[in-house]
Image (cartoon, rainbow, N blue to C red):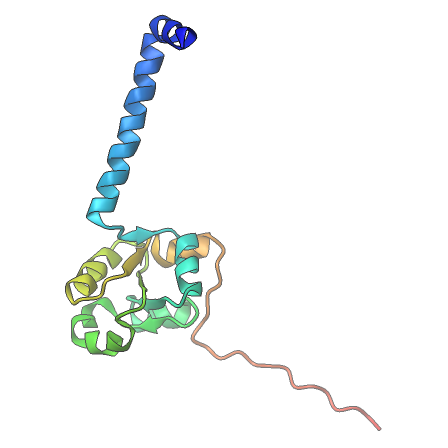
Length: 153
């Protein structure tokens, strides 16, 4: 105990910086918890999707066709208010809202939470962040499968 007090007396600025850092971390975590988590990283979104979350793609139909997350539902942001009934069957499941860059999904998250959806998250970085993380993207075009060649008898 005497060594701790001696260290504290000799390194007052270092100890003060440690205490301030501790309180800053605690404060930001409490503020984040109180405000409700809105945006999740791509890796956390994968965990949610693996646990039966529904992905709502807020981009245009054309952008959706160029590439989207597997099993994502396409509901453009400007149509979200009118199509909330399309999501009534998944009201109890977590929802991950996806836009192009992670900016407009916050508006959708707030809209869905106001409509009574409890577990709604926005994908931080949107589809750009998803692609940069190297996660799979499905295109709207059907892929051709190779037919097996017939054996010559």
